[in-house]
Length: 167
Image 1 (spheres, rainbow, N blue to C red):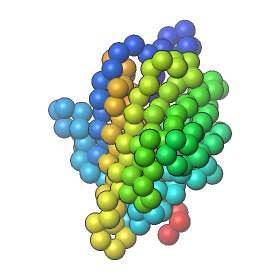
Image 2: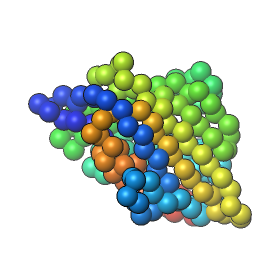
Image 3: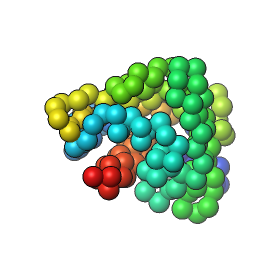
Image 4: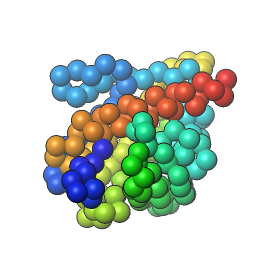
């Protein structure tokens, strides 16, 4: 997700990423993810600290702290531990919270407070026990798109596993 030169992550320019789950096309877009559960369960997994800690982040990373105030203007703070033991802090504020269909929030790495990104999560019921999930991560720093794609893909796979365990 971030550039790790001399163990200090750095951000430089912006790109846009839309994660729709599945196989990537040549533009970096991927197909829709369909989860076999209700939108409310996915929404809760995104906004409940204990659930968020159990899936959020790329493979090998562990979200060890999560504070979430899921309301417009509410703040969140996440701490992820990298495989080599570093702690990465993500802060932000919720711009939109529409349960159970939409979250829009800012994403700011503590080490780069002037580099604000925006994440939009859209949940659309497709029928009984089926929900389409679309994640759009905007203003990604130049050269880091692939890392964010991988991170979201791995994190969403972990979310899928968490939801499957609940069944």
